[in-house]
Image 1: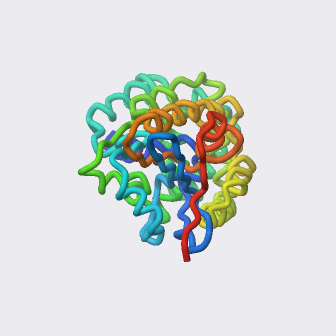
Image 2 (image 1 turned 90 degrees about the vertical axis):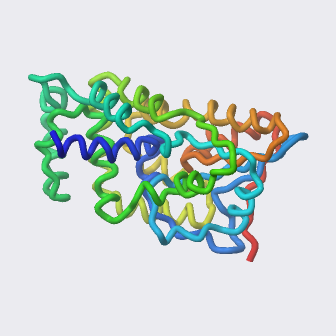
Image 3 (image 1 turned 60 degrees about the horizontal axis):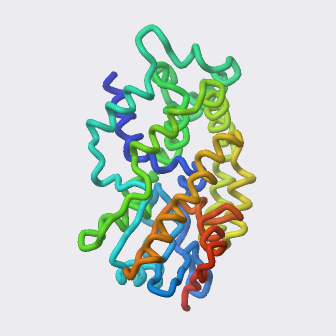
Length: 303
């Protein structure tokens, strides 16, 4: 149980990756000067809001970020994130995951997933030298998060070096706004029925097979600021069932756009940081704000 609790502690720090696992786990190089960034300036008659596509698990080679991004952050009075994980009550969070993410005594994961999924999970465990038996008490959504983050954690990726955390740690003199919350995200993930949870786990295992190649393509798109390519690679690389993808991604985007619009209707400059996959595509936050009539410009980094 001690090992299970330790893993759940890691999960509590990484729940915000649920928007797009492959993208959230990538480790891009900083965008070269003179190119676009996954970063937009949105203007209203009364204020400016900046939108930054985030990478939730990071590494030291992601920094320093471009001056244009740093300057926009410095000039903003408000910082908005999906969830402010600095102030998560870890005891409460662990209790929530224990309540919603573990089976009661006498039940186990093996009773709720197909034989094929179990076989793929065993293969994953062998590849990453992970004791799959320790996953038995966990429901598929918790296992999906575990196997999605484990390869990156083993590769040295760190949630404390993610872009969200980087800016949150610099936000002491700014007003921090949570667009969602860690509790909200847990409720979302735990709410899928058993059949979808099995598919969710299977897709996470299948994505792991091509993870390195997909991460390379995602890094290139993020680093070059190519929003169209980022959207295309994200859609091509995901094997997640459409119902789950929509719940985790598209269905959350209007609420994120609402948060940005609230700032745009005020007078203070805001800096909004959400998973990069939420920003791009025809259903993304950027497209939604354009539809609402705001002036949206993708920022070009000066040489």
